[in-house]
Length: 466
Image (tube, rainbow, N blue to C red):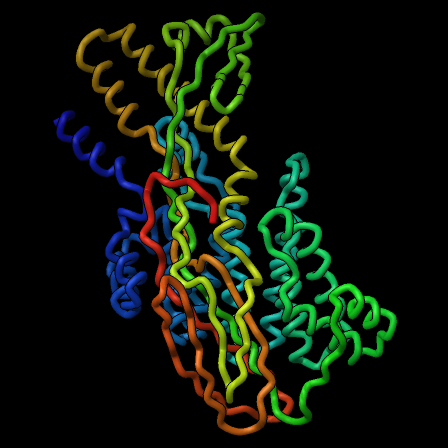
């Protein structure tokens, strides 16, 4: 019976979260959205279990793409409250140190919490509720400020977001609030230049350069207008009178897969109860204080090294490298405003020190229990526990894996009436063309999002950032 349990545990523990939800992910990646939703809803236990945050995040994403914006926001609101619920199940928390992190409630990565508000804002924009969309942007800003406090001792930390400020500026401008639009655009420009360029390789988008100059002009800020005209080496270009604006958001590709990797740590015993876990390859050292009695009882004195599992991201490369909108012979390139893929890597990097320390403690406790049992029972019990510990040693690979790789945008000023625009995505010599129709009314701003789900084939052992 014990061997059967071990075999079952071994099979499930070898799988990442992505692999355990293979039916959903494959349907989603191939654009079979109703089937993807059905696969989610069919798993009733997921709505109540440790992965319920991801259950609602994926349902929210699928419904947003399908145009069910109210239903999507209902799912995202449930996800929001799960993520904000800081009540800790201490029994499960303790079990996570003895087994692995997947026995606890998944709380989400920092950037995943931010993306909940982005999707909710986008849904509200499609529903015509710009005020509610602004509330979601402000919620994102509050979370970013909290991240600044959370990682105050981390160098080169991610705690400011140009994408959020840019989106806020676009929404303020759609509400004819040009003063706040200018302030938001200015904040976006500053963060693109001071943070995004270095951290994510993203400079100020051309569309933002035009938008901030126009907002300064409409607000009557002559000095600021001249300042940005000189900075960006372009003059204010007034839009044609009449008509309305289309802000087109392109979600390109899919974000990274969360997998795991493992490395060896040498165990170095020092004086005064100090034990250091050290990895020479990466230059990592993690000191712990363990008394002589605890050290001897833990079984660590019998070990020279231990192998520990950590989470890592595997990127899914972009299939389409660029895209544009075409209207009556004019082309409007889509410009990247956010790289969600790199944001995911940065988010994990910021908490890696904590993750490594937690993993080392988990494995040390496992080894302690194994050694204690060996001293009492030199037969099958200790052998089974040793095998169980090896099998259950795994990283937390749970993640919101229906997010886009990157977000692009452009603004098109269109005359009143029914207008057809052609969207062309290009990459690998295989352009994809779609036609979109909009009924434009004077003075209105319309928002539309489109997700290209195609990706490059990915290697589960790859760890590069793209």
